Image (cartoon, rainbow, N blue to C red; front, side, top):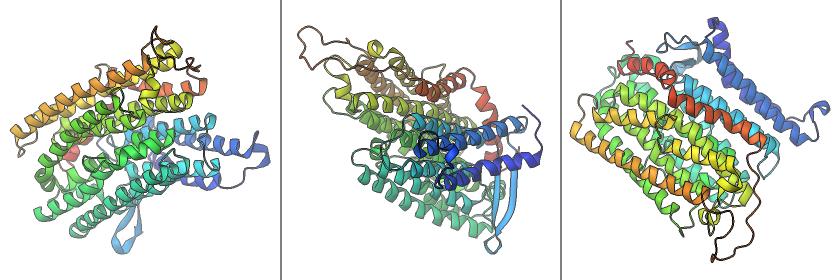
Length: 532
């Protein structure tokens, strides 16, 4: 780690949040002739790579300058009055909970920009695409950096419009309906969430998240806490997404362009679970204790429901879309995150935060790979990909097939890879929940979640068998469907975009202390009401 002065750390965090907005404005301006390269479109796509690359570098430097001996302390803080009449402040800061999500967001956005430079999505002008991508990045980064409830809400809402247009203008079939479903669900949830945030701020006399967490709900009556948790929780649950508020997600993922799916699964879903940890748990603990069993119940139903939906899509003859299958798998994986949060224990919450990051890495890689398959085959329909004898990726494109199998076994929670630790710790937390919660109920939830891991392994292994295995030519007696298509194996730009995700999945699986060492002290302090 490196020694960086507090003022430089402040600048880095402010730069990370604001620079994407400046980059978006610049992307809409005409490129100088000397920077256009072969075309203005190439210039603006290169601009997206440059801006997101600079933000990633700033995020890495911020992480290197972070005091890892005190991860529970808010660092790189900026606290300036903005709306004095409402005591709304521009309050920024990072601790061990938010830092990994900041770096994850910066990394995934850069990889999406790099991928899009070589493989631009089909649709309108790249200029608007790059600008929307950068606005989306700014909103997501701000969500993880702000420490004021109203600023959190503004950042939370800021990502909706760019994602709507990315789906509606650059998406595939049924993109208009999927985009409208996405925006309506999330906006309705956000309206309810805003009422809960206002209720907390007006009753507590402050919107400062650090002060509210330190107060640990002592300034709020139980009835206010219960009402606030219900309202805020609904808004966060829609974004997470929690069953049964998830139905916008499969349509959005199926219609979205590849990079839209990567960012939607990799970082946007994390905004909901982050809100539960940063706002609901420390600010309204009594209200959370009331709803924790219900949250856990919805979580485990989501785990089973998501897995059964994936099994239905994976079976032969179902006509399941592979992107849709991975979207439903996210419902199950985020169920484990919600189960860990519902346990209200340090073990469970740490598991939830670890699973958040692991899901971003692994599912981001899966959507990149499915996007590459769709580019090569022209479809993500699983029956079409499997064909008469299987897509046989191991034989036709061995590196692509190997990466798909790697991502699948990482997603099912193979020990030694990132997907294992978060879900295991979440179930450990639910096995012995916080005092005041019914242990028999949580033991039941844990048992159901364990069964869900078996279903997860089943559908992912079916996908690997159908897509990766099989003969490269029709077997004797099989119906001739024409010559096997020529498949390009992993290209150089794909390798550049996917290798960091593979490496980090292995690193987090083999050395989980890197992430848990950051989150655990911060979680302990958060659950103790700001006391280290």
